[in-house]
Length: 383
Ligand SMILES: Cc1ncc(COP(=O)(O)O)c(C=O)c1O
Picture 1 (cartoon, rainbow, N blue to C red):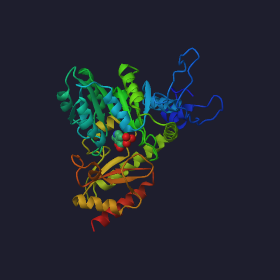
Picture 2: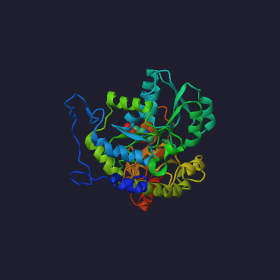
Picture 3: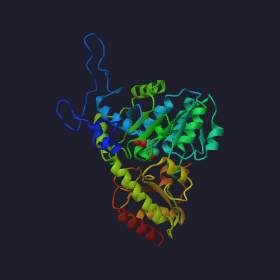
Picture 4: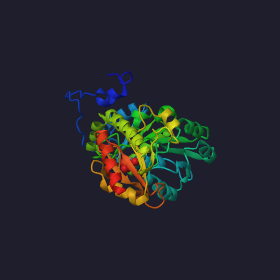
């Protein structure tokens, strides 16, 4: 199978069409070895010496995700956080970094604490507003612009192409946390980004049974080498079995993401005018602030994540979550099962999540069951 001519759905379904040359197996063996033979003349011609730095168990998953993102190379990490923080750790103390005000809270916390203590100058900006990005950029001093789109938990949309053009003009790299969009809906490298990051824990694996992260680079350049060195030396390395699980999960990526997106669109439209709902936040809604940009850079759907702000404030939101039966009350996203959570309770002080907000991760159950269950939960919560 020629990866340059077949469609990405086919690449994912067949894990690049790989067949084991010795056993003819279509699912790869799990390489558990942590160490590799050195040649008799003291060289490592095979390219591998120790599995903290690199491991044949990574090869197919890294190649597949790189191909789906149209990048030069991929690198697996032990978690989404390990992948994201490797990018920041490849910078140097004193570097200026622009990141979104609305973003995955744990990474924002790490940036404002550890990364700041280590010497990065982190500036949080409203990334939905290109003018704000333009005025925050410091030519020659800003080294990285971090984008998350759609961004947790308000699903704010950032224009990747416009932001990348501004960043590049100032000499800064652009990295995109594309966990929610996935390569099924958006390919940030084609829009001008230099790096793409995924919490592979979410849609890429898709079954809520693995913590993993991945980076894909547009170019195999010096910065990418630094990122790989961070992985090898700090040790945020994925295990062999986990790499195998991730590859298996990615086989169904396109089916899962498309089903979740179509259902999320129906759920958003259904509850947007509901008597117990204040507002629904979802980029697929025509009147959503980021809809026009999302429609340009997302193809085939607007993702499986949305938030519902209930009437009746925090108490009504928590009571609604208490009454669901099909939806599962849990954090995380991107699995086959639909999840609901009171986001402000998860994020704590400083969260941009309003107290009446429920974050929904739509899975692949029948959409009628999801709508009926949320409907009865809202009605019971509002007594
Ligand atoms: C958008 C986003 N980025 C990054 C992460 C971090 O991923 P992980 O939990 O695998 O470290 C998450 C986790 O929830 C996320 O939702």
